[in-house]
Image (cartoon, rainbow, N blue to C red; front, side, top):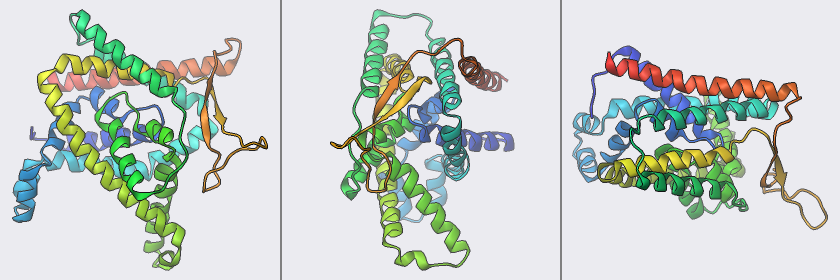
Length: 338
C-alpha cells in the first residue's frame, strides 16, 4: 500500500501521529479512533503486517532500501515521528490540562467519540441483524471494561512486557483504550508517566553532559521498565495487526460493527461528569503505590447540573469535539475524491 506523498501529506501524517499519540495517553480514548476517522486505519494495519519473516530476512541481508519500501517505511516513520513528538509535547500539555481543566478535557474527548461513532456508522448503508448483534457485543464489552476494578502497580519485567502487548491495543483496535487498560492493570502511572518522565529527564541530562543518572538506581530501573514496555508494545503491534488484517479481509463488516460497539462502550469511560475514587486502607487513609501516588479505585459518575455555567461550557466543548471529528472526516473525504 505504498503511496506517493506530497510534502503536505507528509506534514499531515506527522500531525496525525501527534493526535494518535495524544489520544493513546488519555484514559478512555483510543488512538485507533484517530486512525479510523483520519482515513489511514487500514493502511496502518496492513503496513504493520509487513513486519514479518520476509522483512527480517531483508534486514539480515542488509537490503535496507528494499526493507524500507516493503514495510511502507515512509508512512510508518512519519507516523511514529508524530507519536514520539507527541509524548514530549502534546502529552505533557494534556497532563497539565487534565489537572487544571479536567471537566472540559473529558467533554472534548466525549464529543470526539460521539463524532467518531457517527462518522464510522454513516458508511453502513444497511444494518443487518448480524451487524447489530456485533455492535451490541462490542458495546457490552466496552461498558464491562469501564467498570472493572484497577489492580495494584507491578513493575515485574515480565508483567511490564505483557502490559506493553495489551496496552498497545488502543492503537490497533479503535474504541479499546490502551491507557485505560493500563489503569486496570495498575501500571498507568508507572509506564506512561514516571517512565516517560525518566526518559525525558535522561535526554535532558545527556544534552547537558550530565551522566550522574547512571548511579541513580531509581532512574535506571524506570528506563529498564520503559525499554521492556516498548518491546512488549512492538510485539503487540505486530501480532495484533496480523490478527486484525486477517479478520478485516474475511469479516470486514463484522469487524467494523465490533469497532463501533467498542467505541460506543468507551463513552462510559470518558463521561465528563465523574469523580475519581481512591482506595483506602483499614485506617481510612489513602493507599499509595511505590511512587507515593494515590491508588485509583474507580470513577463515581453523576449527571450534570444544568443550572451550572460549567455544565454549559462542558456541553460547548462536547459540541466542539463533535465538529472537530466531522471536519477531519470531511477533509479526508474531500482529499480522497480530489
